[in-house]
Length: 429
Image (cartoon, rainbow, N blue to C red):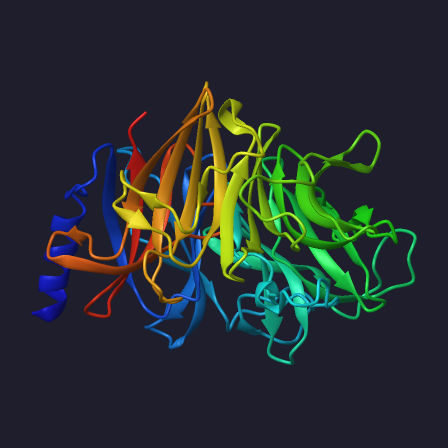
């Protein structure tokens, strides 16, 4: 009876619109112990996330696909941690990996240091999932899964201890999660045992025909450009944050024709205090444009965070949104941080989803949307604490690494009654 009632509730909720004009939310499933919020495919037709498989009592990767009606299917476990990658004796322990933190840069800003890059989200495109994971013996690696004849098979791309490609004697030590491109290429960030970072690619289509397909080294850190942090991939190239030898962090875009990283951001930003260290978060790259978060301290030694972008004819030096300001359209002041932007560009309009903290609580976040046209920014709430969806009250909302494509936003909602809900928000355009 309880299961029947829950099914009826979910069917009802899927038809309910949010209270915010122009944004509709459909709840597609209840979940259990979600460790990685959903991330959306580049074509907007699939979602992938990591959660606990309550039937088998093990971690699993779940997927949901867009149906002909436009709605998303009930998520199903593609595979769980009991599966063994081809050619490897061990099964999986968890579906994420940890990038080794190498440098204690900028003394006094330890609050900005993080051991994990990005969300470690798996990514999906056309029935290929690329992901990072830890094996049952503790080894970390990058893997991909392909669905063949109705069954998922998993293959290794790289594991720690393996020789890194290119002109280096280093071995892989840790990884960030890979992006799967629209041409089935996995691009990922790795740290080596000689304390350098590099970005690699792997042609999955070629690997299906030739298991001996080699990794390609796209770019390696040097004395002049190092400390890579997160990557964002679009149409075969990528953007990353890096630090130069003069101690300045900037965003760089990789140019395949020359094999070089090209600086795309200024060294000074309005709002953030000059003379104080400015820490940049990971980038979001789309159609040659960037969005990213930045952090510093003000004269009272309080954290100030902001999101910057050059999309929608905006200027990097003017923040899209920042903490400490009262936004009347949201009836909100972000008291802690704004972070994890995802950029999407459609015609002459840019969209940036981001997470913000409306209360002084690091565990309570909301998901918001910035729409930018000709440099003008409009902010909207997507899913925020206190919002009602039917009879469910949202406690917090989170997004994955890629959180908007085709004006579709995947969400993890946590309710005040303890439920975890996978949902999809759609933006009118």
